[in-house]
Image (cartoon, rainbow, N blue to C red; front, side, top):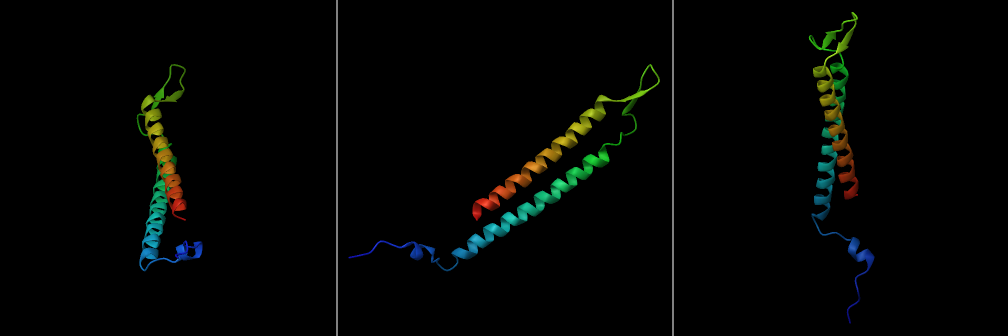
Length: 100
């Protein structure tokens, strides 16, 4: 009469199965590193991009100046890049955690 497999028996892995899991975690860690580099780069671009470019500051009738719609659009694009990079970091960590 055969006995049902025990939990301890299931924990024994076949040769090579550990390397696939290790490789998946290594790949996930590489994605985390790349995502974090992209996030840091996007944040730097946003911070350096906050300085108006020539032509993005418009004079007003009262003698003051205001920022142009082009400036606002450029900054909004940089902010979207930061948000997308941050979301990529979050997804990378979630993928890694799912492998554990």
